[in-house]
Length: 100
Image 1 (tube, helix red, strand yellow):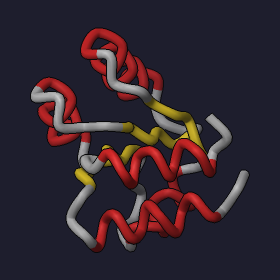
Image 2: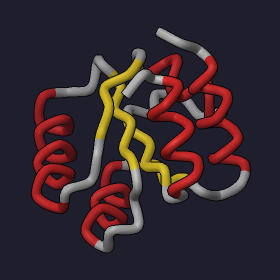
Image 3: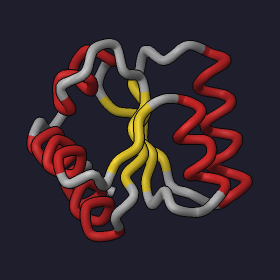
Image 4: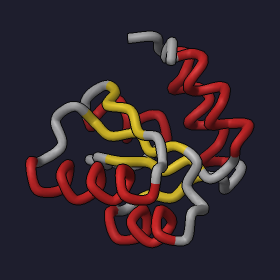
């Protein structure tokens, strides 16, 4: 995959325009603060279903990206399986880098 989007994810995290952690992401989706949700491709079945169902019901776009190690490394955490981007500008840039 294009590694350039990981730089933007890291930048968004440092700018405090991201949320991490399953419950926090679910709350941000429900409050429509999340503009884009990135899921690791090795996310567990239950977690993936929970987050994708919430995204679909609240019409929040989501993308399945690299594995959890790569995604977590981009934000400086360990074993993180999902990131919600809270800023429309960062979300648009990440989508364009992913080719969506």
